[in-house]
Amino acid sequence: MNHMINQIDSKMLTFVLILFSVLTFASTLFFVWGKLNPQAKLSELKTRCKSWWIMSVVFLMATVFNTKISYLAFALLSFVALRELFSILKLRPEDRGAMLLCYLAIPIQYYFTYQGYLISSLVFIPVFMFVALPFRLVLVGQTDGIIQSMAVIPATLMIALYGLSHLGLLLSIPGGRSLLFFLVFIVEMNDVFQFVWGKTFGKHKILPKVSPNKTWEGFIGGVLTTTALGFFLKFLTPCTTSQIIMISFFTANAGFIGDVIISSVKRDLQLKDTSAAIPGHGGVLDRIDSLVVASPVFFHLVYFFIK
Image 1 (cartoon, helix red, strand yellow):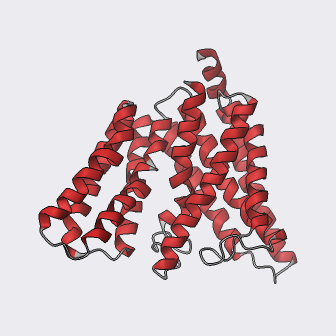
Image 2: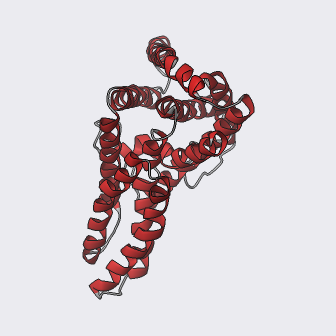
């Protein structure tokens, strides 16, 4: 296993070259495409491509140089995502104490992941915070609207903190950096493939009331292409061929689920973006919605196979 992990680490440079080659090709393609066909609706593709550049650089900077920086970056990512959700949700003034508990949970959760405390990382939020948050709401003494708050606030914590904290958990297992790069790359490429296949061949809406632009053709084409990509990037993981095909397939599906979950929240609130944190690109959560669900699915599948 140690020999295999050393091989994986030695091939990270190859992956970085592949990553930036793909991004450069995509940027060039969209630029030339736009010049040759000015009527083509490429604004969303160009926006997504810029987002991929930003996310790729950020994740590389956060993981290559120092592990502590990585955990701080992930904690900051969770803080921003949590803040964005709280800013758009219709919560009561009485909920502020519970919201504060959510923010205080961020350093605790990432301390557990940094130390590699797997059990603590996995149960802190879905067990202890799911008890503490409703009880804090009860202590306020205001029962009007408390059911909605008891449902919304823990769900928000699961989305913004629990799911994303699995990025940190990945770094606590052998070959974690390579696995993290693999995860982020295939999730982002899944987003690309589903968009491209949908724009090219999409005719049958998959969830018209949630995300009208998503089609069955885009979804199926994206999942299958992402699965194939995962197979070619197997060298980044300690998994067998059959394992990485299965992991890539389910991770791609999970990425789609994360995307439509956040889309449904925004549609319910009649919002286009979760915030304007990234000018021209929406909020941070808009860019990482797929990772929110894909990260825990990917982590537990990998952990199951390599343990």
